[in-house]
Length: 132
Image 1 (spheres, one colour):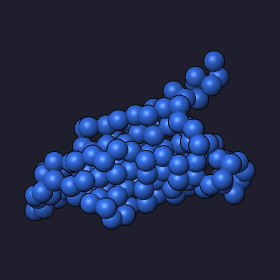
Image 2 (tube, helix red, strand yellow):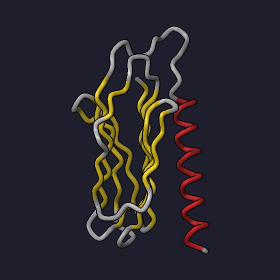
Image 3 (tube, one colour):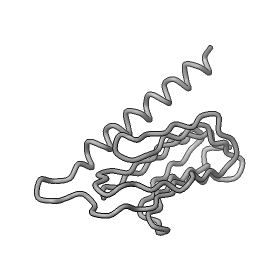
Image 4 (tube, helix red, strand yellow):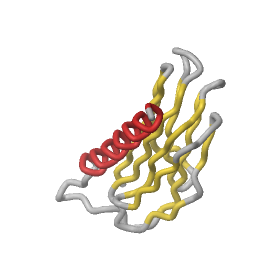
């Protein structure tokens, strides 16, 4: 029961982070959204002995959640984000092996690392957002 409450809390937290990221990455009136589509890949990398658990990722309102992850690395399938995309986001959680554990959440656009968020400690939560 406690495990379900923790997972529900973590998932709700990440949904809030993504929603906040979408709102904060909104373009100014003078700027226009991307005029071409892009190939996007999301990656997670945790230090040795850590264990990934949940990731929420996507663009604008197209959000995907993956739960029950395991291991220290994860890579999404390549996603083609359409022209006009405003925001790309990833948020993830993991359990670290110890207080020195790390987690990286990365956004690759057209094969190039564009944004990276990191976390350290025994309980890991990393996120990254990118406005196009």
